[in-house]
Length: 138
Image (tube, rainbow, N blue to C red; front, top):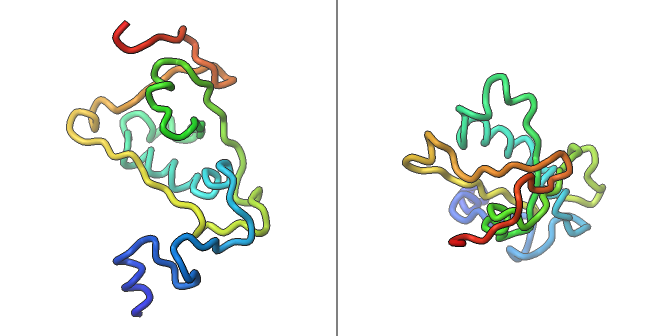
C-alpha cells in the first residue's frame, strides 16, 4: 500500500500519528519499558549478528540485559558507573504503552570487531565494577 511504501522510505513516519514526535500510546515510555519491549529483538540480534561466537549456542539461555545511561560508553569502560539489570517481559508494560513510541538502534561491528567482539566490561551481580575506576591515558 501507499502507507507501507511511505513507512519504508521514512522509518519515523507512522500512519497513525500526525507528526513524527506525536505519542502513539497514552503514556510516555520509561527507559525500562523501552528496553523490555525490545528485549527479544535485542537478545536475538546479540546471539545471531553481534557476537554469535560468544552469545549463541549454550550461552544464549543465560543472556541478561543491563542498562547504562545514554552516551556513557567511556564511563562504563573506565568503571565509573553502575549498570542496572533490566528484568521483566512485555506483560509488565503499562496499559497505555505503545511499542511505536520506542525504537532499537543496534551496534554494528565491522572488520576485526566481528571476530574479536567489541566493548566488554566485568561487573558483579549488583552491576558494580569489579576493578577500580581509572582514566584513559593515565
